[in-house]
Length: 197
Image (tube, rainbow, N blue to C red; front, side, top):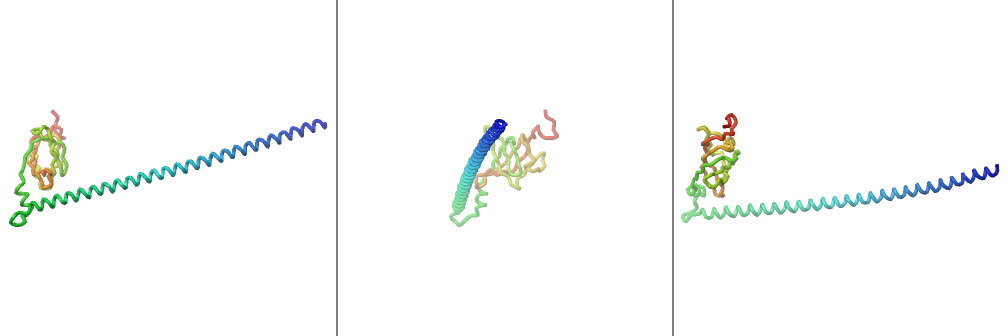
């Protein structure tokens, strides 16, 4: 009986020893996990900081590019104003200053072209001109443009790609081709309401 008691106590002591070893192993693993979590948190913080710095650098580059663009636009506007001032100076005659509009109107020549509409909107039109190696000519238009289709006035934007037209235009002081009048000679076969042939 005494031997049995001793054996039970030995087994219990052994169990306690193993339990202590397991507990210290668990504690060690918990410490390892906590340390790994700290490492992950630190890495996440570093990544977030790098992202914030990259974003800040990108924002700075964008701001600089916008400043450069504004400066270039300002320089372009200054050059255009200077060019207009030079033209005004040239419009001054020997017997005093002439009205610039009268002077340009007297010198402006009306030109005519025939071609096919590439595109049309309320204030611009592009015409393909066969006589000039199918060159595309782009015209600006204002409210005074006369637009005729089937001997009736219509809006410029109502003209369709493919319409064959005759257009008259003048060059304005800025070198833009200003449309004066346009007449549809033959409508495109793609117009709604007409059957394709």
